[in-house]
Image 1 (cartoon, helix red, strand yellow):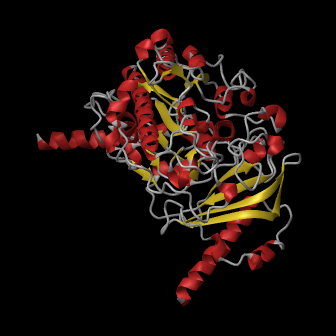
Image 2: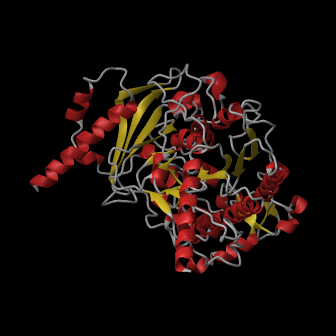
Image 3: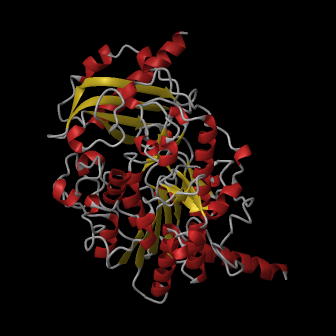
Length: 563
């Protein structure tokens, strides 16, 4: 009996390993899930407040990248950057007002690449940023095999749909609703999930591999969400941000005055002074409550989607990616919304599920992704299976996903790549799924950037039009540091003046993980900047900042050694 069991166990191990080898060779379907403004407020990212059992369950069977960063903390530039694997300075998109194919270069997108390799590509909800930034077509027909689907109920999102204390409807920030009372008895993300499930069913018996991108609108403001999710976060249990005040040494150019939050009817009633005036603490708690509730609402939609994938027998042949376009400040540094270079605005969830690689299913397993009702089972917790702590970027998604799905990853872009239609400015992270991370990689770097119209906060500081951009904040994030320089920028030529330094920020993450103590002014930068003049004029901002950070960190280690 025992020998039979041993043989059975050996065969099971060999079968699993064979599946893992095959998984790297064969083409896989892709389910690409993107949330809007979702920071790492998830249980699988160590947030004890968040109730996200469906996403946590996905993470428990996936590779979880704990330190992934967006290239710009605003929707259109970040999404276009990720989906083309080009940085904002290459796509030349910093606002919502241009289409990269006519404005900078005819760059191939992630879904377009899969489509050209024989995939049936589909888009549901907010994947590309709608409007001018995707040619009013979500980049159809380049990227998609059929026109993108947008939920009909989204047209009510910017109307007065929120019932106030006066019984009237308002355009509020906080907008928990009775779904049955909403037009059509539904909400946009619920409609998107329904459509995505319908599309999955239509592809279940088709031999053509599919690429299905599903973009959820939440937790983007307004927080128009089903009211039952608020019950998961009693207001008496909510807390303020750990660092709710504007740091004393924060350069004014770095501050995000959260203008879009201020425009909401319920926030305007608070009569908050511009630009730094704090939101009353009781309202801060309610914002945080509604944000977390919106995250749980998204978790429920993800659970429905993954449950359908599993129920159709597609979980064993589909790579699943879950990510966000950027984060969202919840009162940290006295800021709200995105629009900055801090971790809370640039750090995003990034999760890759690859069947037979990150997780192994057996005939003893009933289900891979059973749906979990977060409202009735919020206490369910899962342990992450595989994690990567080293720094990665959203421009890495394109080459990594291509490789994991069984396609050849695009080649690395040359330093100047405006004429290159298909290449990547990111790295292929697929090896992270095959090999356990052994140590921290101090050379792993992410680059983010954010434009500003002036040295001090203006009404349009959050989202300046291209013609109004005067300063570009370039930010480097390593394992140990966040280093940001605010440099002069010419919007007509797209040139940055590396010698025109308006302000700087330097944060030591070991001592200051919240990035509240700017130590940039502690150093004498004159000698370092003089050394930079010896670099060739063609040296990129990224290269210069890497060298500067090496110089600064070496100087700090030397001074500590003498002390």
